[in-house]
Length: 457
Image (cartoon, rainbow, N blue to C red; front, side, top):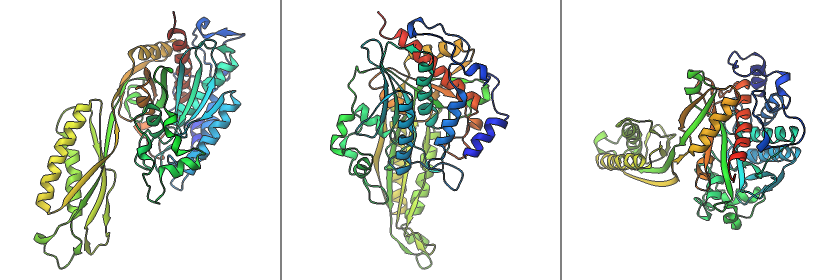
């Protein structure tokens, strides 16, 4: 897809007119040495949109798959290669790089005052056959912010750290937001022995990342160490594009709970076993899939539920399935609603087991609490966008993000930019270059405004 990125950079009709990616606007508007506190916010751009796009295109080569998408799973060689690329960009930007025991990469720029860290960034892993913008926009965009600050000779009061989180997506080992969860203390050594389909463990992969699994707890960041966490991300939905609004201000990030279920019946001959004597695990699982959907639809709201796949055994056309494995997940901004939907789902699963003569056991494998964005940071993002003559829309995030985990430690805010046709987690995922540049420019201005406001006496 790098050719797709380059083609769309030059020909896409979706490129926004809100932001003119012109040579004149690529130059820093600040001259000489200045502090963030003295910075006068202007409508001109500070980031180098061409360099930003080139870095995103280069990254999109890592994990390219035959579908035209990107398969760069967390805790894999492809993610490790992407981290190595990011480390190089961080060093080129003058950042001091460290990698923690969870494989998270941090690049530090010192401040002029001893203050807590302003942390911003995202992740570089993807889902299978995913796109080029989910995660990379926020991570590569954060490095571009540092380069813009350097070019403008701006010295911040707070130390700044760009972060690239490990394994945000979670298909590998079933742990979403792994790296940030370790940092926040919500995930610990109990996951180290979890195995993937090849029989390799989380600990095995951390060793490949050059880390000692026995030191995983050392990755935790102490409360009070961070002034704020800000994450730039594509919306992954249609709202901004349909409203023709370039910047989204996130109100909160949904909670997620995921269970791994096994329906067990009895494998038997498909031709000789009467229908009324079957214990069909696949029939059970199919009915339970619809239960998840119906339980979520039973009340008003933005809640969602998903069964992503089913694996039937023995998997032959002439054998009744004796065992079916499937996950299901529930998401909402209200933790109590998630629990209510889960209870309703489990009650129906039990009814179906009695009717089908099967047994279904579900084990929770991922639990991420909802996270509300800090109102002060939301206001700062709006002010940053307004200073760049960019309209904003307030909206919730239906996807899980690392910033949600770090909100346990510090005030959190997120910036969204439009996703073309609302598509994400697919090769067709696309955000126009103008929207990419808008988002990073707003991130730049947000960091400077927070540096001025937070910790001020």
